[in-house]
Image 1: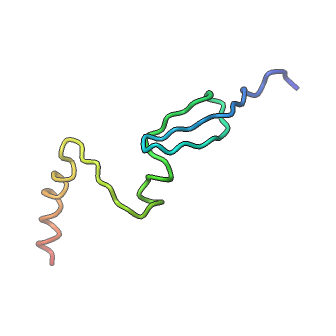
Image 2: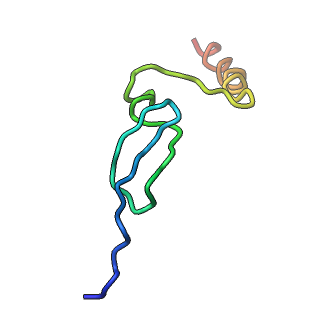
Length: 72
């Protein structure tokens, strides 16, 4: 077998922007910062949070919201 074939595995501390931290294994490095995790993701929490950047939600509602109300 070839030597040094596998990457080095680190004990990694993963930090979320919500403040939650946990330890895992990774070949990336010893520290990873993520924007969203299972503690704050709407799929896991059941709470929907909208992060509206540049009015995308309003633009979507204007474009498609009127079409749904006309069909009813």
